[in-house]
Image (cartoon, rainbow, N blue to C red):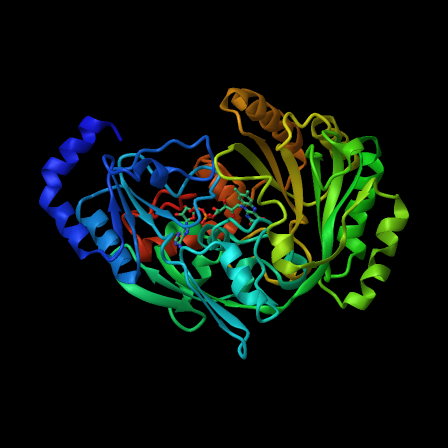
Length: 470
Ligand SMILES: Cc1cc2nc3c(=O)[nH]c(=O)nc-3n(C[C@H](O)[C@H](O)[C@H](O)COP(=O)(O)OP(=O)(O)OC[C@H]3O[C@@H](n4cnc5c(N)ncnc54)[C@H](O)[C@@H]3O)c2cc1C
C-alpha cells in the first residue's frame, strides 16, 4: 500500500484500528511495522501485494473481530491459509488480510479415526499428527500447502484414487460468516453451506477448523519413475490405458514432464536431463507391492526407479526442498477426459521444451474413489474427468518471467481444445468469471444461490469468485 494512502486510512480510522488491536490475542501488522514485508509475502514470488492491515489471528474470537472490522469499515478482505495460491488470493492490495497462520493445531481421535485441524495448518502439520497413529488424510503432493485453500477448492493428491478428494473426507467445518456469525457446517447443520464449502473455495466465510476422516495409512510403496524423453509416446499411451482401465484403486500415479535436478540423490548421468515420469503411490498390502508393480516395471524399463517403501509424510514432503517459497510461478490448467494420440504429440512438443529446471506439467488422476462421488453431491463438478492437468512455468529468477509465462501459455493454448472445458479452481490464476463458471458447470447456479444466503454483498471476493448477483 502506498505510504500516503495508508497514512490517510490510519488517520481517519486511528481510534477504530487501536480498538481492534487492543481486542486481539494475535497481532495487527501495518505497513510501517518491522514484520510487514515478511507478512505480506506469499509462496508465489510473482505476487507483490501491499495490504493496509494484516490481522494475524490467534483464535476464533480474533477472526470474528477481523471480519466485523472489515465489514464495518468497508474494507476489501482476503483470507490467508497456507499462502500457496497461484494467484496470491490469500493477500490483497490496500485491504485487510485475515491471516490464519497462528491457528495451527491438530487433534487426532484415534478411535473415531478423525482429525480436527486448525484453519491455518499446512498439510505437513496434519501428516505429522496423523502419522503417529498410522493414519492419513487425502491431501496433495506437497506438505507446505495450506489445508484451507487446498481443501475448500477440492484437494487432489497421492491418495485420490484410494480415498477420494480432500473434500470427500471432510466431516465438518467451523466457519465465521460475513455477518460475523460463527456456525458449524456438516451434513446435518447448514447442509447447503457444507455442500458449497466442498469445492466452492473461500467464498463463504473464514473456516477456523476442519474435521476430517482419516484412513489407515502408514508406509507406502511409492516414489518417482522416470523414462527417457524419446520414449514418451510409449509411456503416455501405456499410462493412459493403465490409469483408466487397469490400475487398482490402491495405486495412484500422476504423470509429469520434468528436468532432473543436478544433485543427489539423482545419478549424475541424468542431471539436467528433460524426462517424462510417473510419481506412484501404492496404499495396498506391502506384501503385494512388488507384484502390483510387475506390469509397470515390465512394460518398459525406467531409466530411474525410486519406487519403494516410504513413510507417508516422507512422500508428502519429497518435493518441498525443490520448491521453496519465493519462486516465480505461472499456472495454466484444464480437466482432461481423454488423452488422444494427437494430444500426446502436442504434449511431447511442449513437454520436451520445459523452459527451466523447476517448470513442469502434471496430469493428476481424478478417477477411482473420486469418481464414485456424484457430480452434484459436492460443489466439485468434474467427477467425470480422468485427469486434472496443470502446466506450471517456475523459476527462481524474475528475469525469466516471460520465458516461463510464454511456455505455459503456448502449451496450454495448443492442448486446451483437447480438454474437458473447465479447470480445477486451485490450479487457476486470476482468469475471470467465465473460467470459474466453466469449472463449476451446472453447480454454479446453486453455489450462487448459497452465496446470496451467506454472503449477499460479496464481502469474501478475493477468491475464484462466485458472484451472489443473479
Ligand atoms: C507447490 C504447490 C503444490 C500444490 N499441489 C497441490 C496438490 O497436490 N493438490 C491440490 O489439490 N492442490 C495443489 N496446489 C494448489 C493449492 O491447492 C492451492 O494453491 C490452494 O489455494 C492453496 O491453499 P492455501 O491455503 O495454501 O492458499 P492461500 O493462498 O492461503 O489461500 C487460497 C484461497 O483459499 C482461501 N482460503 C484459504 N484458507 C481458508 C480458510 N481457512 N477459510 C476460508 N478460505 C480460505 C483464500 O481465501 C484464498 O482464496 C499446490 C500449490 C502449490 C503452490
